[in-house]
Amino acid sequence: MTTDTILNPFAKLDPRYLARLREVFDRASYTEKTIEDALPMGLRDNATKEGAAPGVMRAIPQDTPLGLLVRTFLLNVPVPQEALAALLGEELVAGLLAGEFLMERPGGVACPVVIHPLRGFYIVHDGLGARLTPISKHLVMGIGTSSLAPANAAPRRHYRRALDLGCGGGFQAFHLAQHCDEVVALDINVRALNLGRAAAVLNRAGNIEFRHSNFFSAVEGEKFDLVVSNPPFVISPESEFHYRDGGLGADRVTETVIRGVGNYLEEGGLAVIICEWASLKDGQPHDRLKQWVADSGCDVWVYTSEQDDLVSYAMSWLRSYQANLSAEEFHRTYDRWIDYYEGLNMSGVQTGLVVMRKRTGDNWVYIDQAAAVIRGRWGEALLQLIDIHTMLHTSTADEILDQPYQLSSAARMRHIYQQAGNRWASTEAEIFLVEPLPYSGRVDQYTAGLLARCDGTVPLRKLVADMGEIVGVSFPEIVEAAMPIIEGLMQRGYLIPVSLLPPDPEVPEA
Ligand SMILES: C[S@@+](CC[C@H](N)C(=O)[O-])C[C@H]1O[C@@H](n2cnc3c(N)ncnc32)[C@H](O)[C@@H]1O
Image (tube, rainbow, N blue to C red; front, side, top):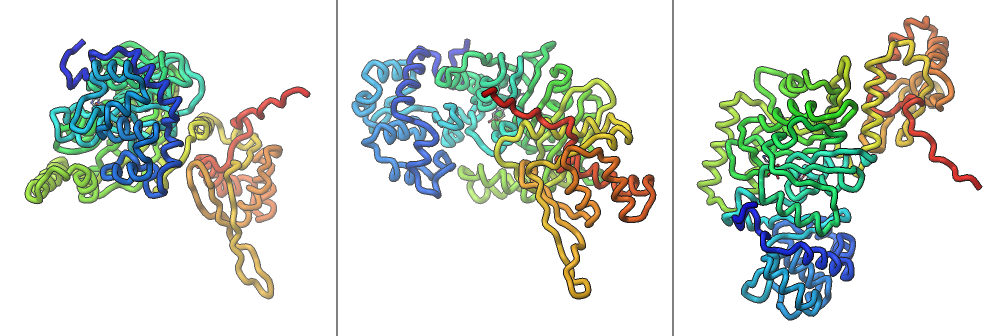
């Protein structure tokens, strides 16, 4: 175990003090909800962002238990030691000081790391100020959009073994620990592993093993049912931060994870990865990703937005890091980033959620390009989508036609009418899904009519045949015309084969 205080800052801390600190958090209701409720609208969800501290402190007075805990553990602001001892007890404060989980600072004592209550967990990470200290390269990042995307998408079913690759402070691992028997959390950054271990005590999560690893090196030969990863995917000429740059150059961090992950999945195992990949000037946007997944042994479902142009991409990353750069340095850095992209022959960057499920056989790849952000947790819908794609890929046309289908409960339709003689005639319909994958499209009135009859009882063959009669074309002709549209609706989760609907919840006997 290293004694380097950057890598192992709490080597002297007796974990029992963390367990006792958690009891104080419970008693004083140091939770996400209590904090949010105390904050004005503009600060909700933003309490740990740069510049938020004065607003948070104004809203939550120091002379309350919550105010004291927020200052000490969320904002890292020094508080009077006596005040903290009155809340935590003398012995606990002394223990935390001896373990360097509290430090003496001008104006009192302060915690050197952030303890962020989020989603029922306590996430221990570094404050943004650590970027300007010797911790910099080893900084353990807080929770951002890239952390939430895989956490929201991962199915929360019971699994035996799960892996969090690039665990940082353990945000994904703590989710996994709630529904998996064993969790292995890997990171190259020893400081991250140690902050994660401290958080595991606060979260009373005894089933996570934090291991030092370069990508998959610490799990060679092991298999998992679920892998979740938010790797350091940013494409940049830097290798300044473990959590951002990965240090391999170009988009090789994403390549390493995507090419590798299939080897660590059980048959049927699922990987949920948020990542970025480069588009090259002389290729199509997803060429590289398609090459990487080609031999993965997995079915692959990708949700990606429009590609970012290189200027916006570089600007957005640099803006978050320019605080310590002079105007001249900023200019030079910007030029260096753009020169780097030009040297790589890049035309843009794709960000996406890549979901891979191991399946022996002929695999499929589906790339869904949509600008919308998916909100809320949607792991079950994701599994259903993957099942639908697999069914479409492995079934004959007859097998597809012979099944009854039902609309998703989130499916909606809006009819468009046009004046025809002295009445309104429905010409086409806009169909849309309200959740989880926002989707909208148009269908003609005949398809709209067919969809209305998809109540889960009549096989598609009959509905399509009836539609052919109305339109006045033969069955083979109507199948040829209608099936691509119907299959497209299945691929988006608008139309679901009854065989893939979740079983009705059991009605308890009276
Ligand atoms: C973007 S952060 C994600 C942190 C956390 N999992 C989350 O979702 O908030 C990426 C993490 O990958 C780690 N990392 C970087 N290079 C790595 C490597 N070669 N092997 C394993 N982990 C690595 C970083 O230290 C960092 O903790």
